[in-house]
Length: 418
Image (cartoon, rainbow, N blue to C red; front, top):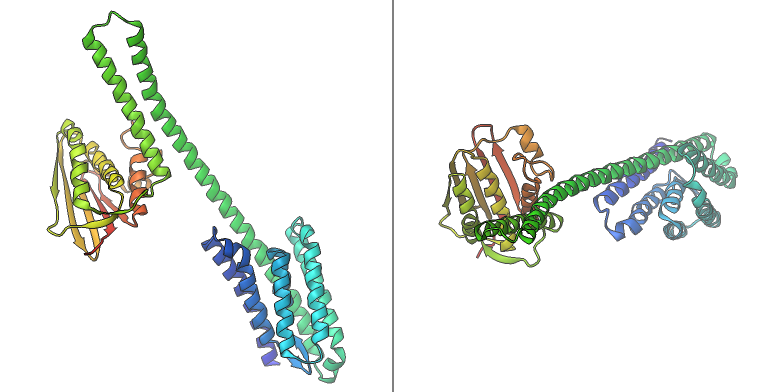
């Protein structure tokens, strides 16, 4: 009896583990067609195998176990094809086990599969309590039939108490597993809804921010063009100024759209081996005029070892330029920005340090949000683009900062050796 009780609990434990493994597998590979289609077949198929191998009562061809629970759940949640394969597996294992109870086992397996197939459309329209009630009722019906089929044998073996335990374990098992399956799936749906809501919120904020940043310069450019069109007596010097203002605003729109597209699709079009030092020099060259406006000096201290990484040079320059722009704007009264590169542990490390106003922990936690900006005149896309570009190159970003003590941005990228 001790061995029987242990195998009963083992059967139940195997089914619960199979259910949990399937859910973890499904959540870790949500886009995998194989997991969606065959994940439940693999996990519940293994559960059926272990239940039948470790039957808790075997005597003269009679095998008692909890195989019907994973078969029932597999048919309902996996669909008729998965249920059919699980039924075939159950019959095949039972034939290998042998004994005079094979015919009864085949009939009960086929019957349970057919019932599961036909009640499936109704099952998913029921509330949780009714689902559990239906599953328990059908499972108990089959348990009673199986016991009745082998009743003479059980009485001769003086195992009447076993019959009661068998019914109780089946009843508790199907109730526990059904409730757990429903709870897991309900929580998964809730998490997916929250995730989708968060994505939609991010997109809505991003769209509003981009709309604001695009609309303002377009309005300004339109005003400049209208003035040039209707005021034919305007001096040439003023016309040139208005032309330049219109061009500046169009360039601003171009930068916003470029940042948005990079955020939406950051992965390089063509990966190639590139020298980090070349990208740094180009980014510094682009940002130097802007730094001069703020009276900021940019110093580049490169390593004696050349750092090569895999990526797209233009996007790397864009990421470095965005970081330098933020650093420049964080030094309103003039200061220094230092760039250091080194090769360590097969990684290229780029450190960008400034002696600006720094950031608090609260600001650091929000850094990279598409609608969060410290300057008050941007979309906040800059750092988000940086994160996306570096992640697309399998790199990492660390930022250390304190109010009044400046900021250090560390980019770590896998190095190409040789």
